Amino acid sequence: MEKVATKRKRGWFWLGVTLLFFSLLWWVLTVLMIVSEGEEPVFAIGLGLFCTAIPIGLGITCLMQRSPSLERSPWGSGTLWAVSILGSFGVGGIIAGLNWRRMGKHSLMWPTMIVPIVAYFVWLLLPWPESEAAAESLSTLFSAGFAWSVWRWQKDDYYNWKELHPETARAGWQIPVLLIVVVSALFMGLLLV
Image (cartoon, rainbow, N blue to C red; front, side, top):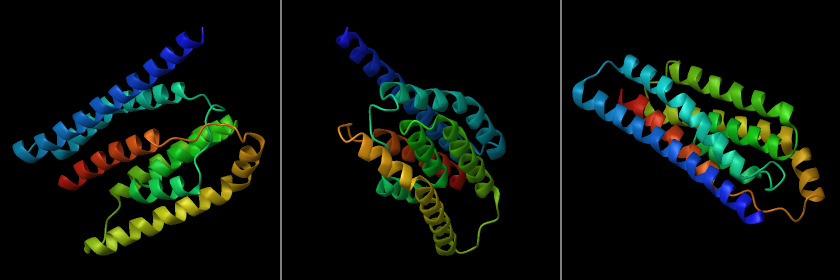
């Protein structure tokens, strides 16, 4: 019976990876279409968001099916900082939301995920400084501030959970890396427009 459960979890994982891969491929093709054919960028990005929102959501859900909330540890402060700065504060919000789920606080998961994702898209629409260095600095400072505030919010619960569950498996790096890749592809597509 345990082998069947392990195969099922492995199947969910690879289905999630496949959905996220095809979403990334969709964005790469969209960016190439905009650059090479001069396609209308607003239409192409809107179509990309419409066509990949469900596969990305399902891909993340499938990855979460592989690791139930109390089977793996929540991510620590280093991961939260890294994904917030390398990906964005939207990715940091997703990781923070998954942390709440892994710590058993399901009611905090969705608000923690949705608010930064919406804020990320609003952030992309704001006027940026002319200097690329100033824009990057501003983005990094905002992401670092977000990571610090979320970590302060989760810190006590994280350490309590770790104390009560010392034998759990490590959090893993697959989900943060996949999220960084998907968000980076989206951001690069917007930059090329």
